[in-house]
Image (cartoon, rainbow, N blue to C red; front, side, top):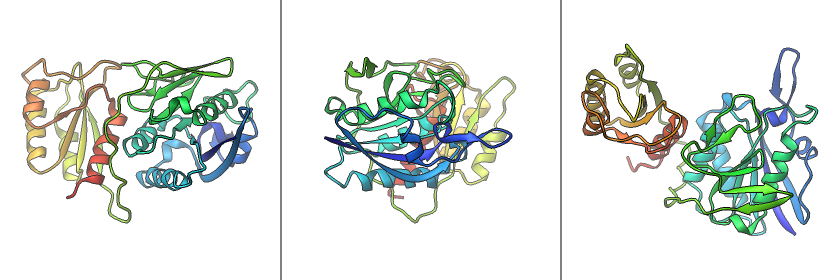
Length: 313
């Protein structure tokens, strides 16, 4: 019998009506009771927190990261499911993936409809996550996201629908597996870099901000982030990673002060690329910005955060 640990953090999957709107308040056991547990799987629940994921902080995410590592210290555990709000699931999942050095799967899931909704999507998503977390077929695949019958690699997967059931996708890639008729159909193994070390605890957390470029944008907000003490800034540029000469100058000055600047794009899919000058990615890269490939804003910020947390400085 496979053993899976469910770490409950809240989100819509754990939400009930509060009189004016929904908010997370259910414990993990209540959430688990809604789902069919795959045959041959035993489940233990860890109630870590119960919050709407838009309220999560870096400290909360690091607490989740350390809890996952503590749970995996038990060799009897075959995998982990994390129930999580959809708003920031892509960020937490990617953070864990960057530091995940164990072949056993960690599978995030959640819901678009609240706990007690008729025909809610949470029970199916949780079943599929339990199925994946207990499967030897996805060992070594890193952290995964189970949603609407599909299993995605954490890296590159973002929320693409605000309300619809098929909330998550990798706009520049494909699912690593599907769940059909209660079976896991694996299509391939995601490429993953070597895991980063677990961040040290008890130290001040770095400030990492995001600034979006747009028509008429100037460096005001970018410079404000530098002045606020940001150790990292994600520049969410246009197109393949383009801004203006004024923004390039601000990036160069920030990098000279030791700020890590990451360059992504507000376009839904495709990589950032050094194509254009006069403020484009050619100039931004020359100024010291790091191109983030196909990572979008939230996950680019997590990459900068992890770099800052594990830097010897």
